[in-house]
Length: 135
Image 1 (tube, helix red, strand yellow):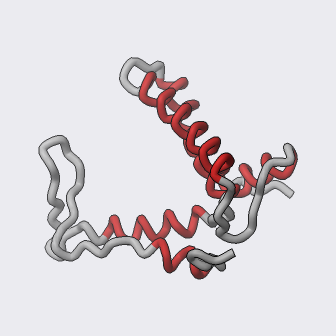
Image 2 (spheres, helix red, strand yellow):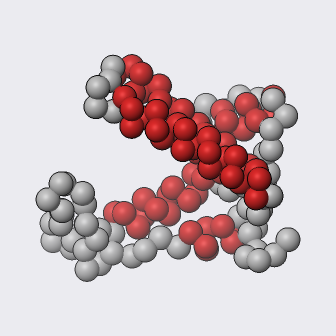
């Protein structure tokens, strides 16, 4: 049962190796949450290390590792990360002005315009079965 989406591939890995793979958003023990945070920090540091100096194939590998560990962390918490990403994308697209203009910071970062609508990640997680403060 292989699924070529990042979420499906990472689920396949977690199941094959006996790692946590929850199916609905769940608070996890602090030790597990901290471990996942450490894994993400390690991968992000590796991206930062090669981002400027390369080589490009190593950067691509490290970026893939960040995504892989991020999807794994979402899976450990039972979060459908694809749905959350879709909501963040919806929000990001609202940064575009009605006139099609894009406001940017001096370094090129896209800024929030007057029609920006923040992502409602809480609603996405509730649709996935999360009950804030619940069991």
